[in-house]
Amino acid sequence: MTMTFKVQNPALLDQVKRGGQVNFEIEQSGLGWIITKLKRK
Image 1 (tube, rainbow, N blue to C red):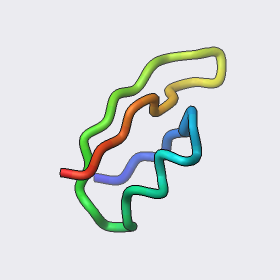
Image 2: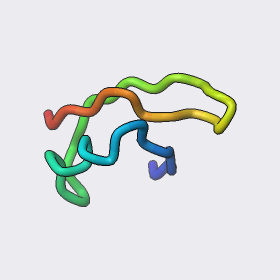
Image 3: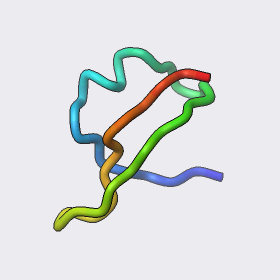
């Protein structure tokens, strides 16, 4: 499944590669759902 989210801190994306598996936390804000934590599996 593919879903699109905004990320709170773009530097979080430096630690992952396209197609990689991750664990993440999201929060709802006025902009919709935003990734607040991101970690490679």
